[in-house]
Image (cartoon, rainbow, N blue to C red; front, side, top):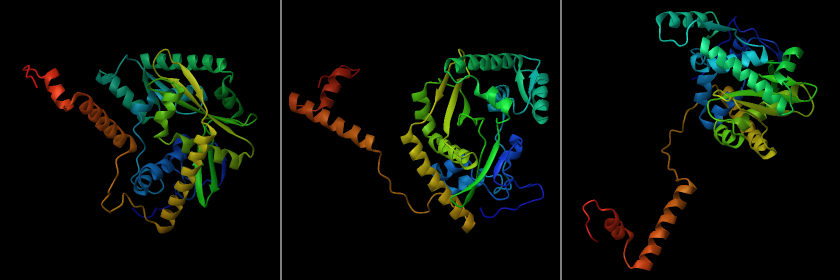
Length: 323
């Protein structure tokens, strides 16, 4: 996996904030391969080969993610931010008929977000619920303010640690120094549970990456907030900021990801997993669990004078065998 080719289609964007479409941003037209938060996460959680595969400017066969699974989230983002593909309401309650399927496919081919009648009602209800709850959280509607100020979905490009970086905040409040990241979630918007799950997806690295871009282009103190909105009724919402400790871990991951990215670009080489045979230790909890079991069985043997297996045979044998 080596090399990338610039074509006439690559209109380069220099460092700065640009009002371009999501498709143009995703195509990575920054003049050189740029590092996004998602690709940085792949460099840390997977390998350079995985990052190369996901980079539209490195991988000539790169294909955007299938949108079908994200239609609800895309529609909610568009209604909240005022930026993105328009909704195409399909005159059906589901996609069981060929006519509905054809209408869905035609809408997607036209760059629209297809939703059934029921889905349109669900998304509008989600957005209404979100706006009420954001007001209750004391932040008002940052996405409406961003739409009015023209700061929603700006594409940011900047140089740091010797590499080109990019990000696209959902909304920026330039006066307050706060950026907002809307996340529609399939489960519950419980902050603690969401963060535990999201950490494995690099949410700490993402926040650090975005904060770095914001301070690079808009100097000052910035905060980065995730707005979690449940897709299912009652569409509860939570607003989350990562702690200083979590952000510091994210910054360390980010620095490491940039070092790997820079080295791979310089060498024009994108390795996968190590070719050496991996000798791995079990996680600490696994050893602890086994030692706890050994301790319990030894205690039983000392107190009763027989192995716990003998008691198990007497207690549970379906044939009633007596040990």
